[in-house]
Image 1 (tube, rainbow, N blue to C red):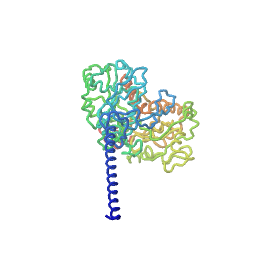
Image 2 (tube, rainbow, N blue to C red):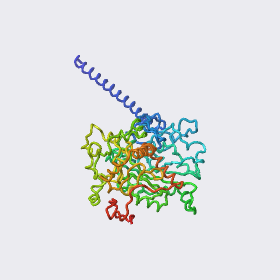
Image 3 (spheres, rainbow, N blue to C red):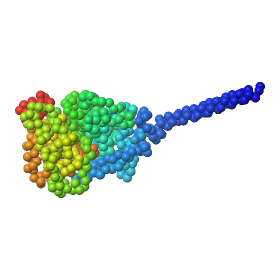
Image 4 (cartoon, rainbow, N blue to C red):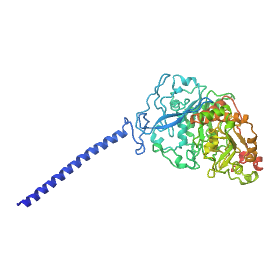
Length: 557
């Protein structure tokens, strides 16, 4: 073999050796990566795992949030109990990761305890571990010093969160139920404890049950017209479109009918021959956030299943409500409106009647329903009747597109106005109603046959708002506003802002207070008529009351 052939053989051997080394290296790396992936999978699905990214991994059974998980900050507003105090934002850390966990731990309770572990199945709702939870104190359930709020476990709060996360939920519902589970009247385990026999049903207690199923499907919050965008899709929750059949009483309440709490209540009520109060009360709380809602479905459920329902509806009509059980629901706040301490002091001292230099304010569209005959008779309707009455000086009335005034924004104008026009639009309710309240402005509301928010035993809207028939929109209402004294405006403004908005509207916790406290007054025998303009068959026929599109309803007979 010559030298050239020797070099070729040596080169071939060298290449083979290099290939062998490379193959061996790839094999070793493959084994390492395989072992790493196995360990990673074990960590992801191990009961002792601390964190994982829920956007890319399916949720295992019975998970719960860890306070040590990755956090982001969410600003929640504290509820104000005093009529004159302002609500300051509290910065709370909200977990965004969804780890595995062992079954629900035993809570730490007692007057001196500093932490209460998570006691609900729903892993997606913020749980405040440091707040006081009076119902968990020893012997608290025997005293019943306050109403008891309970949450069911058939939907979002299902023990198997693979099932819970397949239950649709709107962002509005997420906010309300976050406030519910962190409310001092909420008992986190009472629903299960009563059903299992661990807790006795106590005489003198009032139980308010909130169903963990979709009922408040507000398609315009937090994004007006957002629809699917307003569904809660966090933690890979199922988010599908709703149909008109998806209303709060459209599903069967057979489950509730068979539970121990409702079964005991129905039996007690059927055996009660007196007209006096019952030993204890149970109320199934329903919140209907649909436009053009029809609570008649809930009425049928009352009859068919003999259930003690209380329906709070965003777009409620008198003829579809039970006067001593139901109530209106306040629309959520779409705009970020907060008064400064100086502006609040101006309301309290009546100085606002001089400081506010706009007498009336409305910026928006002029749609107010489609009852042409009614609108032709009365000059336009709840909004359109004002369209040509603004002067861009004292009366700011304009569409958003054409509004121009000293570089002021919509919220700036509201905070400088004495009266805020908040008449009904396509529906009887209006988000502007809440915006006007938040700005410390007196609402002027036109919505015939509409049920106003909360129970009348709790809130007297006639002390706050100008509630006028839709036919009086425009010049008649402007005359009433122009002739009102500064003293009357001041009293209305203080009641609107401090006694209604700050107490029962500003926070979701306050809204829950309002819904429950009104029913508490009813349970004690207090009864007052609902405010508002009621239609009847004669006023509808004469086009004096706008009940379109339900003017042919037999309930007006």
